[in-house]
Length: 229
Image 1 (cartoon, helix red, strand yellow):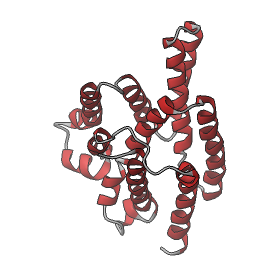
Image 2: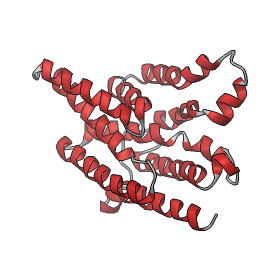
Image 3: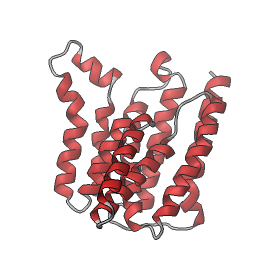
């Protein structure tokens, strides 16, 4: 079984591999093996799953959202300095906002306002890094949190939708293994199902680890790609 800390480490390693492949000449020069990209596809689903778990377990959802927005703003500046477009914080912030809207409606708040807010944030997330994938994962992990079978079935179907729609097309295998292999996010599911609901290692460093590591590792990788390759 895996706790939250274990999942976070798995997602961070996966994320690093994905960004190494993306920025150190992977897609064009093939100096980095493509399996770095394959393994990288399990990172985002694990992060979205953990953000949903954090949403249900945090004592202060307002602070939880504010923290993500703050680092999203910081990452916006880092992106501009580096000339890249990577800001998972904004996607995760939108995910939390969507769940807040859903909870507001669920608990008998002003339903029209809650629904409108949820719809707006569901549109906003489409313009962030995670786009539609982040939107659908948010809804899957929110509604089926305690229904592992339904969570698994909907997640598998969503992951494989791209493959299903590509069946019969010319260069099918090249398409799904070389150009658009987002469907490999499917392989995050076993890790998610192994989650035991516990935090694991917990201290201030662990609490802030991902927030600091994300901009730091991207800066290092991008600078290495520009000055060493």
